[in-house]
Image (tube, rainbow, N blue to C red; front, side):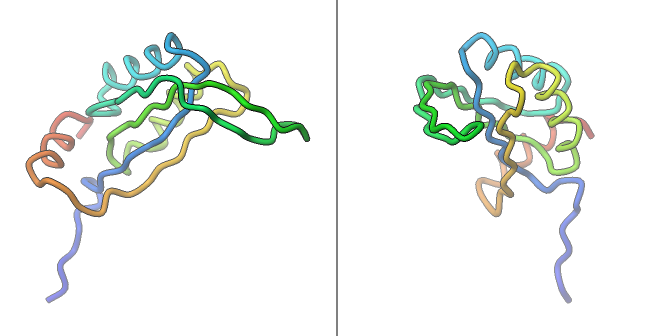
Length: 113
């Protein structure tokens, strides 16, 4: 018999870059308070090189690594967009395909049901 996955519990990692620590902390706090994420890591001074409006840009940013559930992604994106200063914030979701069962259980318990 084929094993099925409970789609309500599919875990994800969401990557978001922010221009400064203040906006990164604002977004992270909002996601945790609303239980849209179980944990948010902030990595300071990530160097980003990208093309924006036809020009190559270079910027020092803060990277958020957000642990959440796939079913919360639309709410999570809306919350990030509401709190983010960029016109076009980077918001990328990646599936978690494995890991510590205890950690993933904790992640599921700490986010909205």
